[in-house]
Length: 251
Image 1 (tube, rainbow, N blue to C red):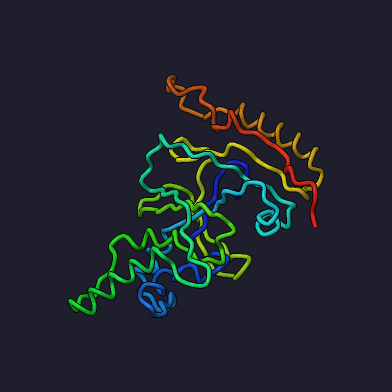
Image 2 (cartoon, rainbow, N blue to C red):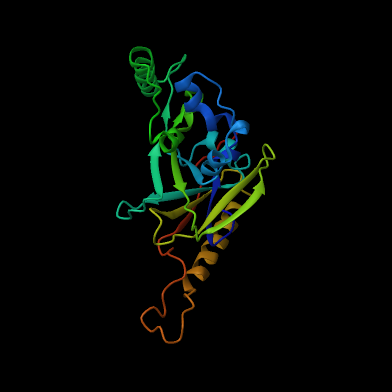
């Protein structure tokens, strides 16, 4: 989240581990797919895909240490809304490789490619792999129990898009922002958990709660003639809660 009124998703090119971008291609085709050598249209496709990496571990010490400023940050709890059918979003658990090597699902896909090549002399590629490859990772990351949100933008994208240099690798990377708890999003922010080492946890909890109360009072500004929509809440955060991590020991 970049500020109080938006939900930010980052382009996959600038992820912490840059090898993730080509993990599936390298596995299936046993050849190094060099992003820097791609055609500009392929690079454009990469820069249209944005992700948010979540975890099933919502109050886990390892996750706090790795992704929340050494436990001084906050955990944003998202609740899936299955009634929202937004085709631009895909939310799925990550498929991890096996300990010691191998990736069962990718092995099957690779065997099909090899069989077609060797027996029928067909060079085969999976039509939707550009999308689904974002949900495969090596075994080394399996401890995270990641659930990934993937968003694919369109040419007429109306949501705010901007560029930043990533703090980890200094890669120029686009990001996109959505209005907080927008009714078209297939998920909502339902809870904010303050980390085990968050400064002044109890005081900040109360301040967050008061801040949320103020946001709940805000109404959408509409044309004076639009009586039907007058008085609609600007933010869909009626059930948003703030809590403190239950982890008391830190070493």
